[in-house]
Image (cartoon, one colour):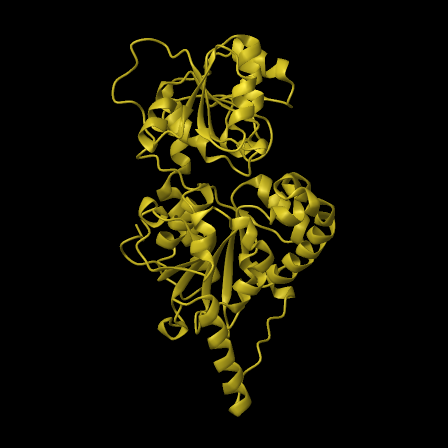
Length: 414
C-alpha cells in the first residue's frame, strides 16, 4: 500500500457553522496546548512533532530533525527540565497541559490512555509540512491544512500495541489481564492514524521490517545521527592495552544488561556496568568480584569509559543502538547480539563480534576469546558514515523529494 491509496479529503468549513466548529477546535487546542498559537504558523513552515523529550536516543534524533528540516517549532507531549538545553534545541518547544506533571516523575506511560485525545486536539493552523518523530501515538495529530504532507521518522511502531508482551511488566498487576484487549484497540487506532503519513523513514532495516508488518507500508532507512565530533578517538593513545569490558545504558529488562553481568562473572573478566535504572538492585545481586558499577556517568565520563574499554558489550535487541556506533567513533570495538538494528551498524571486519542468542556460556566465551578485528582508526572511519552531517543530508533529500517546493536554508544546505 502506498500513500496514494489513502484518501485525505478534508471538509472545507463554510458559513456560520464552519466558523463555530473552527472556534470550538481552537478552544479545545488551547485547553490541551496552552502555548500553541495556530495563527502564528504559515503554510510553508515546518513543524516537528515528537512524543516526549528527555535526552534519550530518539530525542536526539528529534532535535536533529528540527535542524535538518529548518523547523519553526518542536511540539511534544512532555519535556523533561533541562532537555531543551542538553539537546541544543533553538526553536520554541511546546508541551501539553499535563506535560510538566508527567516530566516531574517521568510518568510518560500514564499519558498513553489520553494521548490520542491530546494529540487530536493539536491545531497547527495552516501548516502543510510536518515531521513526526514517532515511537508511540504522535501520528494522531490531525491533518488540518489542504495539501498537507507528513514525513514520519519512525523509531518503532508503538510498542504498547505491537510489542505488548514486552511492555506488560510495566503495568500494575491488577491491570495486566486487560492489556491484550487494550493492545488490540491500540493497534487499530495506530493503523488508522498512520494513514496520515505520506512517507515513512525507519531508523534501521530492522524497524523498516516492523513498519511493513504493522502497516503494510514501505519505509526508507536513515540511520540516527551520531555526534562523531564529541565521540572521538582519545587525544593520547593508552599506555597499556585496555582490560575492562563495558556495558552501558538504562538498567531495564529488555537491554539484557543481566546477560553481560552473568557472562563476565562466569568468565572472570573485568566488566564496568555504567548507568542506572529499575534493574540496578537485581544486577548488583548477580555481579561477581570482577564486575564494578558506575552510577549515572555524565557525558564526559561515558566518553572516557568508551575510549578506555576493551570492547562495548551490547547484549540487547535494539531498534538501532546508537551507543554501538558511539563506541566505534571512539575507536572501541563491540561485542553485540546478532539481531536488531546492530545488523546495520556492525561490520564484523572492523567493528567487533556478533553473538547469537542469550546463552550465558556463549557470551562468556565471546568475552574470554575476544580479539580486536581492526585498528581504531579503521573503526572510526566506518562510524563517520553515521555522522550528524550524513543524517542531515539524507533527511533533506527526503524532504525535498516529498515537498517539491521545499528548500533547506543556506546555513544547513552544504
